[in-house]
Image (cartoon, rainbow, N blue to C red; front, side):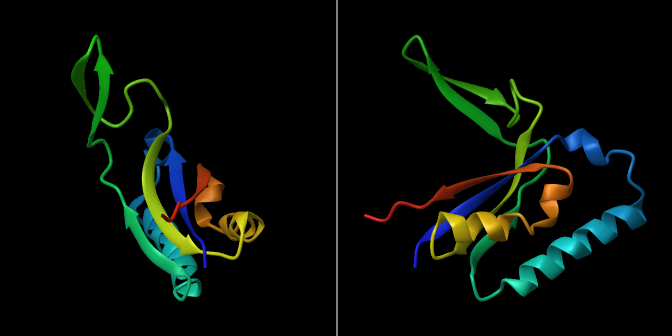
Length: 113
């Protein structure tokens, strides 16, 4: 069965004003969603906020920039790898992800060689 990556993007500032209780409720929604798809999820990870590096080549040299968001408001905050029959199936599934409440989800099929 094909596998797809869901790249969960958001602006990290959107939850700055959330209380600890509100954050726990949000985390629980993600847990419940993940459990409901356990048989189809190959992997899923929350990425550390504000950490990472961006590498790109400039004038033939590798340039490393701190932070995952040098020129964007949205950053990838987490990923899921999920099995689905086709793009239509994975898109419908992604629509049910709690991340849709405050962020966006990029869907990409994993190419198998």
